[in-house]
Amino acid sequence: MTRSIGSRFLLVLTLGSAVLAGCGRSGGAAAPPPSPPVSVTARVVEPAPWTDEIQALGTARANESITLTAKIAETVRKVNFTDGQKVAAGDVLVELTSHQQAAQLKDAQATAKDAQRQYQRQQDLVTQGTVSKALFDTAQAARDSNQAKVEAIRAQLADRVITAPFGGVLGLRQVSPGTLVTPGTPITTLDDIDRIKLDFSVPETFIAALSANQDVTATSVAWPGREFHGRVLSVDSRVDPVTRSIIVRAEIDNTDHALRPGMLLSVRLLRPERQALALPEIALVQVGTDAYVYRIRGDSTVEQVKIGLGVRRRGEVEVISGLQPGDRVVVEGTVKLRGGAKVAIVEPPATPATAAN
Image (cartoon, rainbow, N blue to C red; front, side, top):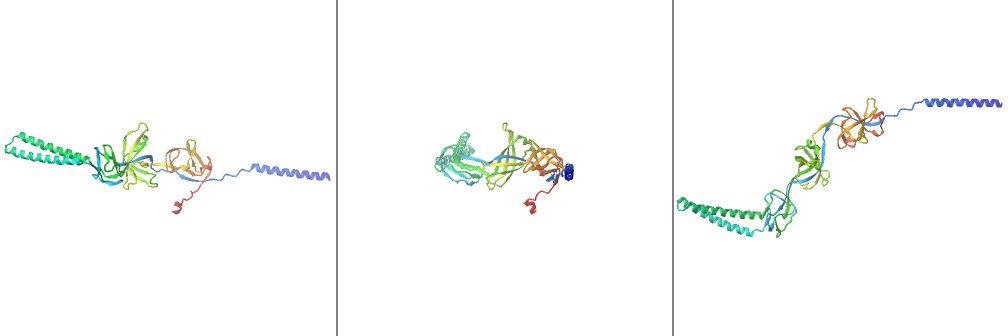
């Protein structure tokens, strides 16, 4: 009886071991399931219009700008303007004391008038032959001399009247009636700001791309969201040997006087349009100083390709080597990829603007 029970236990143990061994051999032979494709968005690389931008910082300057001063030392008799007033060319702004010169002018005019009468009288007598030519010449010289004195005094009076040499906007008044002014004493400023000259420096590497009449766009922190458009007037004839940059002068219409001389502006200079291969910056995989992208092959697998980069613009970068027109490149989903991985291309999510259309 005992031997029978032992035999049965041995048989069960043997069968169990065989079953376990069979299960082990079956598990070792099974291949792991293939990895599912990685969902990505992609773009076909094609030549497209590309406009390069040269960015710089510039300073606004008035089209014409001066500081009004006196030519002589004299006291102010009358001020004919207010702060910030708009004036035309020739408007009288300040009158200086001129009583003495006015009296001298009347005296000189009377003397000149008498000299003119003497000249005419001598001219008639010379015609009649009753006086010599020498006396006539003396009368003519006296007439010319007295007329010159009248003109000299008128010039002195003109120096005592300060006028606007061109139309524009006046600055703050620096003098009052009774103020003693001397040559060089500032009276006020005058700026023609209907047009603004914008001076900005550009690296010498862009000289070949600079020319007159190029479009310029400028922005100012004083006017958020607003762009000011103008054109290039001229390019300086010299390159600064220290900074290796050249000054470019542009002109911007400013009839509403939004811009003022001295303001700092951010400038974008647009170069002529050309064709280029471009990709979104998010498609790049940066490894140190090298840039790579994942190119999709015909069997839906990807390969990592090193590319050369050109200039950048808002969210895009120019590709100058490594890709050919017609290549399909992964744009989103590069984080999950490795060389040889299989991908499934999906449509990018619709933006609100796209959904509205």
